[in-house]
Image 1: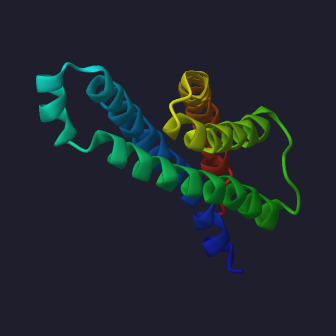
Image 2 (image 1 turned 180 degrees about the horizontal axis):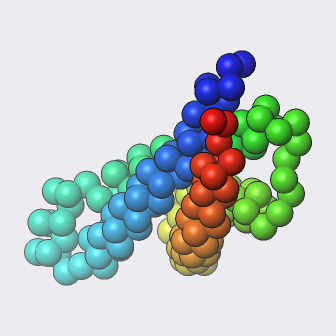
Length: 154
């Protein structure tokens, strides 16, 4: 692999993660609108149903899960290819934890579809924890990107 390609691959993971962070926020907004639709009075509900918020929330959630898994393992793969090792530290461990959280949240969907309120609350809690960790990951990730940029080949 050429040195410039290896260097440029360092930036695929952070770019993807920023896109996922934005998509996660959008999924959260859709989830809130889904709840609003579900709990609204009949007239309001009739209007809100047209937005298909639940369907869109489900679709974005599935996309997020797939891209989060690919992004997590892709970031690990690029790090390994470039350095011959992984740097086991907070950024890696929190990223793996976030991938586990989103996986658990998605695994609750069949129970949510059956009307299980505890599963719904756990789904929201897991995703809110993931979003909180995502904020921290954004900061620590940009610190890593800055180190890579400062140590770039001449």
